[in-house]
Structures are given as C-alpha cells and as structure tokens.
Length: 204
Length: 210
Image (tube, rainbow over all chains, first blue to last red; front, side, top):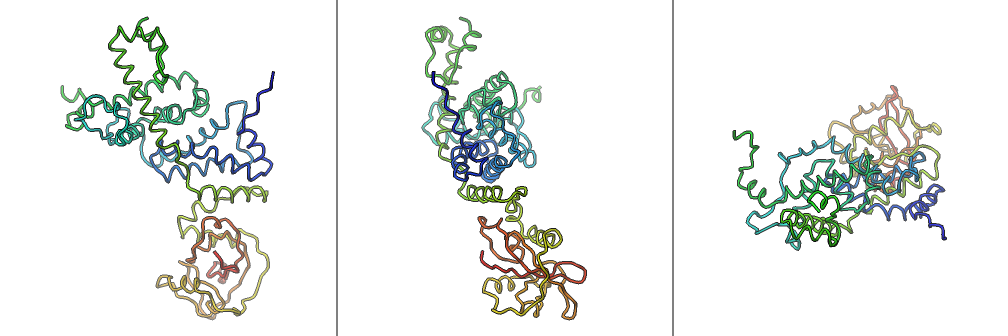
C-alpha cells in the first residue's frame, strides 16, 4: 500500500522554514487568491482585503507562526488568521450587520421581475445582488457562507478556521442559506421597494 | 419519508436527489419549492464564486512580502514592517526619523563638510515644497542638509552636532522624497544634524536614489 504523499502546502512550508524564497513565493501564489477573496467577501473593501492578505503571509513567515499540521490544513490555518484580522478591521470600522438586515442597504433586485430572481442567474445584476446579500449577512453567517459555499472549504477545514465544532458549521450554514433566500425573495424586495417593510409590532 | 427526514438527508449543493428523496419531492409541494429555491441559491453562489475566481491581491503585496521574507531570512532581528504606517503618513515618517536618532546605532560622529556636488533636482524640489514658516537654513543647504518639517531651525551661530545613522528608506518621505514601496524597508545611511538640545533639525541622505 502506497504511503500518502505529503500535502504540497506542508512541503512548501517546510522549505520556507529553511529560507527558500522560491518556496515562499509558490506558497503565496497558491493561497493568496482565496485569502484575498475571503477578506473581500467579508469586508467588501479591496483595501482591507489587501492589508489582510499581507498580514496573513507576514504571520506565516514569522518564526513563531504557530501552525500545527496535526490540528488542520495550512489552508484552514491561513483562513483562521484572515478571519481574525478581518473581524478586527470590521470592529474598528463598521458595526456588525443586524440579523434582520435593517440599517443595511439591501440588494437591489427588480421587484417587477417575475418569479424568483435567482432563477435568472445569467444576469450580472443578479450575481451582484447575491454578493451584496452575502455581505449583508450577520458576520457569523457570512463567514461560513464565504468559506463553505464561495471558497469551497470542507466542513472540517471551515471548523478549524472558525474555531468551532463541525456541527456548528452545518447549522450556521443552514441558517445562512435561509437568510439569503429571505433577503433575495421577490416578495421581500417588493415590500422593501414600496417602503412598507415594518416590524409587525410597530403596526399593532 | 417525512419532511424532517428529507432535509436531514438532502444536500442542495448536490447534483440531484436520490430516488427516495425524489419520491418525497414529488409528493410534497412545500419541500419541492424549498428544494428548488435552495438549488437555485447554490447555483447562484457557485456563479458568484466563479465570477471572482481569478481575483487576487495586487502584485505589490507579493513584492512587499518577498522583501519582508528576505529581511527575515537574512537578519535575525524581529521582522520590521515599516511600509505599513509610513507609506500612508509623512508625519509618521518624520517621527521615525527623529526617533531614529536616539534609537538606532550611531556609527561615527562626522563633521559638517561642504558638499562636493550641488544638491540634485529632487532635493531642490523637496526643499521648494517645504511650507512657509519652516525657513531653510542657507548654510545647511550648502552642505546638502534638508530641514526637517515641524521643528525649529537652528540660527546661524548655534552649535550643532552631526551623527551618522542608518534609517529605513521610508524615512526619506518625511522631507518630501518619493520612495517606492518595494524599497521602503531598505536601510539608507543619513547624517542627522542635532541642535544643542539633542533634537534633530536637518538630515542629509548619503544615497539619494529612490
């Protein structure tokens, strides 16, 4: 039985530890895109994404970076650092998005469009609306959608990156998808456009 | 199969439900509708991901990281990241410059000697850009010294000491030089003119390339 080949990331990291610059560049090029996109999806800011990407890899080249292959993949470890940095930036900048999305600019979907707007996925506006809907999710739901649905991490890696059990990843993802559907439903878009989306209790 | 069992087993991200799940969908309109919405959402998210799949950090990030890696590999000292605050603030660079006089190693005291060649265009431009109220000392200029912003300049008869220090190249921004981000972390030798109170008043960079 053949022994499993070592993870290319782990191999590259070992070479990085010996001062191999080419290995560092290779590792950076393999992983920077996902980290940058994660930060972009989470913050909606290219400047934040750039800072976060830089800080993540600076952390990696420090002697005491703390990566332990026994605890998860390098990819999950990098996402974990990126998450902490993004959250720090979000805490400094804007407050977290409330659960019901009030106070947040809602995705623009043509309320006159027949049926579910997600059906027409060929439209660029639809993708943009979906991207904005993800950005408008509360942070704990946003991060799990970005990791699992957009960056296609498996649940185990996402759990390492988020520092929570796999079951929590599953339940948050389920809730997050429900919230996205709610935000994108034509009924809600229509009501929001007409300005009649009020909490029920205020009408009583 | 009831609705709860269906959702326990269903995976909207999957291509197609198996026979048992499909049977439930055919007899439960509510689940069929919710399933369709979930499938559409999954497909939408896939397209959002694909739309940005080639997006990545700008090339300058890699350049900065490689510079930091070289610094980390070649020097045992802790990693410095001077470009982060310094590139965004000339004032921060000025603070670095002033602090450096006391914090960085002093190689050798040198005397002020007349400059053997005229200041280049970049220095003259930097001096011309200095705000009013920060007069340029003519004698210092003759020696190639550039007054530091926001500090009181020495009068002609005041004694001055000059020390040679090593600074990050980003400190050159404090006196109006443009420094490329790739070279911001590189060290550059400079002569710093100190007043009798020990405060830095002017600087002369020994390598004026940027």
